[in-house]
Image (cartoon, one colour):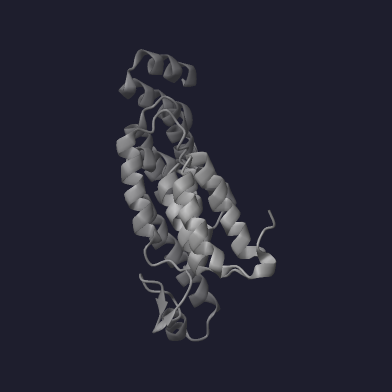
Length: 256
């Protein structure tokens, strides 16, 4: 039936493709998330993204609370995020994994804590706060942002409207991050998506507001220089370096 599905895919008979894959990979087999992810993977390879999304979502639902906890699900998670991003529904994917990550952390805290009330109070809010104290984003929550960097921005499927939509999404996730999270998550996200202008702005912000000791600032400066050279933005780079120069200690300044 898998060969039948391939033939039907070449003929453009989508419904027959789905039916053949269900018989070959789903019907009569144990209920696992992997079989739904495999069907979604085949459909994605044939550019049947709407149908692929349906099976990927079923795989996510079947995996349940262990979706982000078990390594064997990671390829399926990346597949789901990639499909959703191609369909311009990255916000939905992000929201789904943010909720699942928070619930996973909640269950883990409650299982280990002698005081459930205290465990609940230590969970971050939507704005990243623990009570009145600011905290870094939960790594498992921000892991879904990392997953969004796997959407293959250089793919021929990526058109300008999709990139504009993803740029707005990336900016919305940058809001509320501190500099550490911006460097770890937001900048790689923009870099992977090919959003060079946004990446340059964030790198400059990081360079101007971050630390300059121990060569960290110079490393960030070199990253910005390399990026702006590739963009051929020499005038903009010159102005940025002039603004940055007073922040560097004399002994740290590169020797010409």
